[in-house]
Each structure stands twice: as C-alpha cells, then as structure tokens.
Image (cartoon, rainbow, N blue to C red; front, side, top):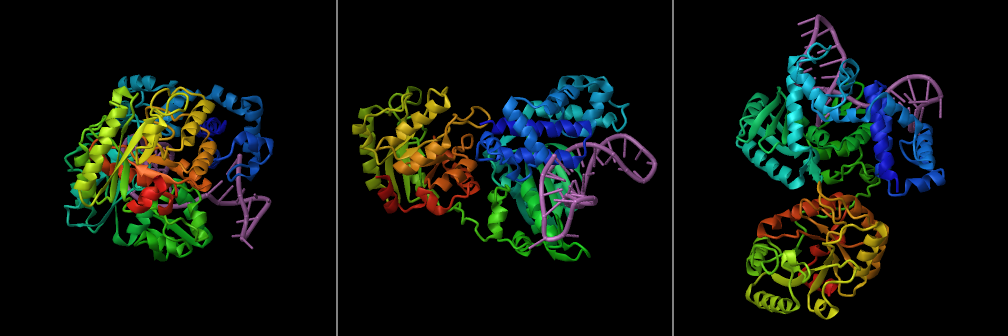
Length: 570
DNA sequence: GCCGTTTTCGGCCCGACTGTTTTCAGTCG
C-alpha cells in the first residue's frame, strides 16, 4: 500500500506551493486530495489499475494523472522539480508559531534561511528586523517559538490534556460572571493526541473572564490577550486557548471551535446551499444577516436538517452524510461499561491486591472486574507460573464469595509466542474464566509474520480476546504491519473479541480500525490494562475511541450484564 | 486544482489578533 506515502507527498506539495506563492485554493485542493488518500480504505494502486481515481472526492484529472505517474514510475516529475526550487527541509520552519508560508518565503528568498538552526542564528544576530513585515518583536517571538518547540515536540497524550483541561475548567468556574463553559477543539472530540486545549465561555463580562483566566497558577506565559480571545502556555508546556462569546452565540461557537476543520467546512457548505451563513456567532440568513440559531449546538444542527452529531464523530468521515439520511449510529455512552477485564494485580506487575482492585471497581459502579496478569515466560513483568495460576484462581473464588456487589473473574494476559502458540498449554488456559492473548516480545515482523502470528492465536479455542492488537505506543513505537482485513475476518469466524486498550499511550485498536472492524461484524471489549487502581479511570479514553469508531453498545461485550457476559466468554 | 439541481467559468469558510504599519498583511484556528 502506497496510500500513506502518496498522501504525504501531496501534503508536502501543498506546503511547498504555499511557500512558492501559489493561490490558496490550489494548495487547498492538494490538501483535500491528500486527506482523501490518507483516509482511503482501498489500496490506491488498485484504483490506479482500475482507472477509478477520479471517482474519489477531491481528485480530478490533474491529480489523478500525478498519482498514476507516481505509482507507475516510482516518482513524480512535478514534485522533483518543485523540490529543486524549494528545499523540503524548509518546511520545518512552518512548525514555528507566527511563521506561515509568506514569512518563510521571505526568509528563504532574502536571507537564504532553510533550517531552524539558521533561523535561530539570524534572529540572535538581529538580521530579521530589516526585512519588510518583520521587526524586533517578530525576532523575539520566533526565538520563543523555537524554544517551545524544542521543549514540547508538538502534541500531548489525551489524558494529560484532559486532566489539565478539567482542572482549568474547575478554576474558571469559580468566577460568577461565567455563564456557560465547555471544552472545545480536539480535546472535546477526544482525539488520541491533542495539540492544544480549547475552552469556550459565554459571559457578559469578557474582560473579567480574561483577567481571571491568565491568573491560573499553572500559567507560565501569556501568548496573546484580547477582548474575546486569550492564549497561554502552562507549566506542562501545553497551550490553552480561551474564547468568550455572547450567550446567544454559545452553541454556534462551540460547534465552530470543536471542529474538526473538515467537518466544519462540510457543514458550512450545507449552510450555503440552504441560503444561510454559518460562523462562530450563529447561523444567519445569507442575504439579510437575520439570526436563525446559535444558542445551542442542537439548534444549529437542526436548522441545517441534521440530528445532533456527537463531537467524537465530527471528523468528516461520513457523519454528515449519515446524519442527512438519519442514519447516524447510536454510539456507546461513557456510562455503558459494566466492567473492566484487563487489570493487573500484585500477582504480576500491578501494584494493588485483588481485593483492593475489586473494592475500587465496586466503588466505580462496575458489575464485574477481570484480573488478568501476565503469563509465565514474561519474566520482566513477573508472569505467573502454572502453579501460581491455580493459587490465584483459588484466591479469586474466595474473594468473589466474600465481597458482595461485584463479580470477580480470573483472566490472563497470555503471551503470544513468536510462532503464534500461547505461553500456557490448553490444560492451563481452560482454567481461566477468559483468556486475553497479546504480543509482548519480538516486534520485528513482516506483515505476513505479524498477521499469521495473531491469527494462529485467535484460532486457539480458549482465546477470548486479543489484547492491544496492533502493538503501537503513541509517539514511541509504530504499529505492527497487520493485514487488518484478515484479522477482522478471523475475529468474526472464531468469535474472538478485539480489545480497545484504553491506556492513553496505546488506544489500540484505534478509532479508524474500530469503524472498519465493525463493518466486518467484529465485536470488541474495552479494557484499561490498568497496573494500578489509579489507572481504572482511563476507561473513558477507550470508550472515546470506540465512540470515534462509530461503535454502539451492542458492539462492545463489556456493556453486558455479568450473566450475559459469562455466556459469551465461556 | 476541483466542482456543478443556480454555474463547464467563477467561485472556493470566515473572523480575531498581532505586528508592522499609518490602513493592512499575515497567521491562526
């Protein structure tokens, strides 16, 4: 599959053309095409062979011809020429706040600056201030931006942003002049990584809100402070943007700032077709600016002929079309989970006793909890020997009798060995209430090896669940190269449930794979992989991933009662 | 460069804030 490679090439072309000064509509067309390719389920080479490229939205004659050339010859002359004109390395300059294509072009054309290193030096030597459109403040801002970039490396894991965001909201709520308040942006959509935290407020006294906002103790630096918009950087390095709007615009603004950008562009297109204009202040008649809606998001969507679309779905992956046909999924709710089946105890590498975990699970309101410790060969995680397995099962049965109001199940996170066999013989596996199989060592595998290894494990009659199926660690380790179509087919065939691992650096399966798996009829289980009772609340990030993957309650087995669950995992 | 139940040409989402200007371009979301 060359999809990813080709999508990235077109994103790069768009950036380079921006710097070259090409009209924005053209570069946007390249980005839309690139996004279409990136989201594609099918192999683009197949579409080239079948001459079906131009059927894709956003891909016309010119781009189709370029894709075909690239697939057939392995390179694209247009791109090669462009790279000679403008060095690709220059694109890293765009990542610095306050630098866009125009300024980067000036820096390159006038001073020959191509790298962040060169830019830093030029700023320190005061060489930028004489350029048109630049000044001393620009130099200082650029230096500050470079420092920040060096420190944060871009994006943050969902849980860090979520926890910071909620604490900030609590602080802001102390102010009585705040009327309504909500998280917006990618954090409200619960994306797996977050660039910055967006907060939206309605208030009759914006100035007071802004002043209170910048007094939050964690604020390290104020980036901008205006009447309706203020941005700060927290001690953690994360940026927080606050917008204040009038009450009658709150819903429209919340919709607007929640995004995604692609969802909004699509939505605004619908507004225009209906003779409206949609912006952060509301929905208006296009001709006379008459206010139509804007107090709530529901109202805005309704006037556009749509049901309410939950934030997690707003990625322009077909939710608007589904909404227009009244065909949106009734996605799983955050309160629908009745238990967590993947929790480690002190028997292996967890930090809490089974009793403590059970009591905490009961406190959360779960109906059951599954204690799944590592298997024997995973020595670094103190995997359990066969003898220990028997002892642990005894302990669990006793505790299950002793503690009322929570069912305690005994599982295992059994290692899948290099050849696809399992780390316990079937005579041991059958003692557990359920078996979670997962790959923990030997990550260097070809697509075929990784796929076959996983499939072989699924074929074992005692395997109930595949843990973190693609093995990725966000920002640290790539996914295995798996043939997901084959995995989904096998999961349905063998009644194996695929895990949505809710640990914030895993979120594996991810949203895209959930959506695709569902189309095959795959059933899922959402587990935290907690190693401490403090990790049990991570469940919400797994549910969010399921919601982003269009999953409904019936697609997820741990929404079932204990009685029904026992029937399907036996 | 893409697209079309107003259009095969002429549109393409839109407003706030900053810094450099002295009325506005560029960036950002």
